[in-house]
Length: 130
Image (cartoon, rainbow, N blue to C red; front, side, top):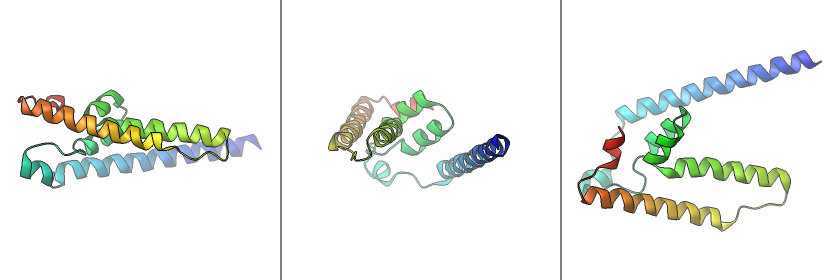
């Protein structure tokens, strides 16, 4: 009875790998063919979400540190979900606190401010990372 369970496990893992590859290919296609950020085109400044798609793509392909540099919210969200999952497993009545949302908001604002202050001084962080 152990052998069919292992085969089922391997099948589900390879199915997840296939789905991950499909998501990565869709993100690659989107990154190269999507319209540019309207906020950035109009103002010349980065919006709070600029770099998010590239960060998600880099995260899914295993480049976590580079993903964090493009947009730290992607890595933060992953670890927040891990944290919530562990808390949910340990305590079935756990409800996410507002501190996770406040942390995300602070992270997005800090990212927005840092990238645009650097851009003001003609240092384009997102272009430097490419």
